[in-house]
Image (tube, rainbow, N blue to C red; front, top):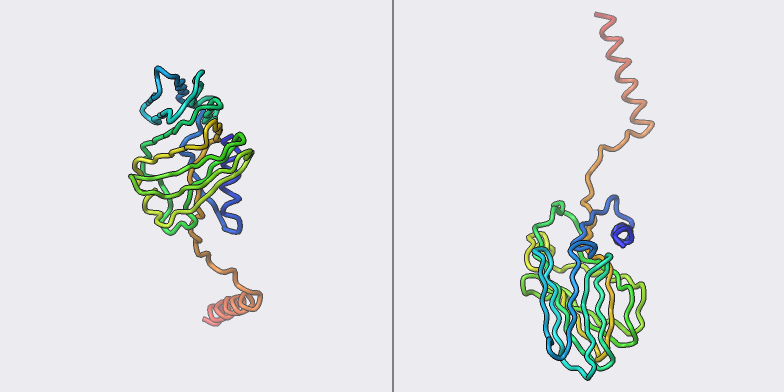
Length: 213
């Protein structure tokens, strides 16, 4: 999962000299599972890095709704009569993004959604930064978006992802992170042949002057 993310980060900066990236969550550490039913319509789990929450909005017996993180996947499933809202929060530290970097943004992969449409929305420190509708039956789709104000992510803070959908929705996501294009570093130009010839002549002239002395 992570290898694909790193490759996508490089593709996102195609044409640039260098690209940088940082994985925010690979979903392969700190496994979490929330199972909701009629008696337990809400649930929250936190492990110090990631907080996973799920709330039933509507349901019909027998109730079946779950949200889990394991094996590198954030996986959400709902029974045919269930509609839930799933929220994931991270306390993101300041990222070491080079000064002058461009195309700073997020990227993630939708592994699979069922036939129901879903919506994803990201916010950082309470400021909305991206939202998108995910059509039903989406598989292996890469999603990326740039930030209008890159300083938001470079300072870090509380990053929140909220997912909702039509009754019965299922969705699974791969690891996600941040990518950018490194600033272009000026290089010393290589002398053209004519210039090199002049340099050579100049060196010969200096040598001749030394010999005369």
